[in-house]
Structure formats: structure tokens, C-alpha cells
Length: 170
Image 1 (cartoon, rainbow, N blue to C red):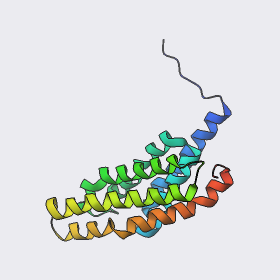
Image 2: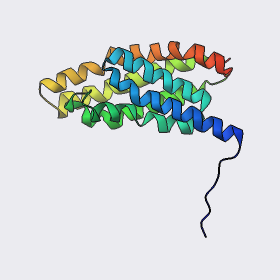
Image 3: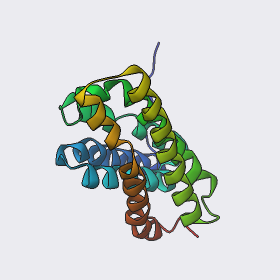
């Protein structure tokens, strides 16, 4: 007979609550409709999630924002093939932040931002120069350039006070 596992430990409840709040914000962020605001908020949420949820919860959180943006038409249709790569770039950032967790917040965060932006720039360059053509492809390609580095870096800065309040950075 199957039994339903009841979450009864306060720590499990706290983690679930944190995940729900971060997930809600990550889903709503793309509705802002502005890449600078949305990207900064999503990247900040990813950084905060590393310190509050750990890598597993952060990776799960990394899956949704770009998919929601595409679903609501906030990303050009030409961006659809880029969604898996955007998700991978979010995961790369999460892993880099996690690698420096407890060591050096800003080095981990900014290296994560650089790796994320470099990965997306490289992939989008290949995709939009060799496989995808048209006016939409050019606009989509511009979204994967310097703006990714800017929003990821601003997300690191935005997340810092929250991480400090959580008491989980050095």
C-alpha cells in the first residue's frame, strides 16, 4: 500500500516555502517585459536560490523563466531554439556561484556571469549565423550579447544584500 510522505520537519517546510517564493518570482519576472529588469531579477533569484535552496533547487528554478517568456510571447519566436541553451547557461551560472559559495561571493558571481554570457554569446553566434536566418534572428542574436553579461552581473549585485540577510555568504 502506498503511503503519502508528510513533510513534518520545519527545515523541509522552510525550504519548500523558499522554493515556492523564488519560483513565483521567477515565473512572474518575464512578465515585466523588459530584458534588463527581467534578466537582472531572474539572475538575482538564481544566485539567492544557490544560498537558500542549494544546487538541486537552483537547477530546477533555472528551467522555468525562459520557457515562461517564450510561452507568453515575450521572446521572439526565433529564440525558441535557444531556450535549452539559456537553461544551460543558467545552470552554468548556478554551478559557478555554488563552487565559490562560502569562499568569495563576488568572484563566484561574476565568474558565473562571465561564463553564462560567454556561453550564450558563443552558442547564439553559431545558431544565428549558420542555422537561423531572418530579421527575427538578428534581433534575437542581439539579446544574447552584452545584455546577458550586464543582467547576470546586476543580478549578482542585486542578490548580495539578500544573501547577506540569509547569513550565508562570506
